[in-house]
Amino acid sequence: MEARHPSESCTTLTDLVLTGETNPLNNLFGGELLARMDRAAGIAAGRHSRRIVVTASVNHVAFNKAIPLGSVVTVEAKVSRAFRSSMEVYIDVWVEDRQSGDKTKANEAIYTFVAVNESGNPVSVPPIKPETALEQERYDAALRRKQLSLVLAGKMKPDDATELKALFITS
Image 1 (cartoon, helix red, strand yellow):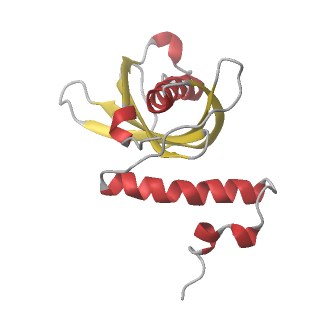
Image 2 (cartoon, rainbow, N blue to C red; image 1 turned 60 degrees about the vertical axis):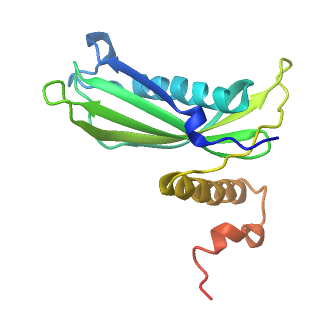
């Protein structure tokens, strides 16, 4: 299977924050943002794999900045690493100042998707070939995150988590 670049999976969703999507402080509900991120990440994973994809996990979410009513919100998702049938998708969320056009990073998240066939069985996905320094950084970190997850779930022995151990052991 030929490797693909993260840019080939890049998905950008832009929308307004409307009244029915806000909490009593007039900020976007966290759950609404999670749904927007899930949609963008699912499209990105589908673009990479060219398969049906399902959300396997929400690995990390950081709600760093409230997103007020009336804001223009952009959710950008890219596959950061592909494994056998799973893909890690890194998501950046930006808020745009409507008057100046300046964008500020508000939130970020990491989701994992699995490519499946029509029967719901996992299928192989193409590898990722990073092109930029940021893509390479996210690609490298994805393996450490996967190893940590497997160790915590009891599916990998800590001694086998070589990339994770390398963070703590210096030669």
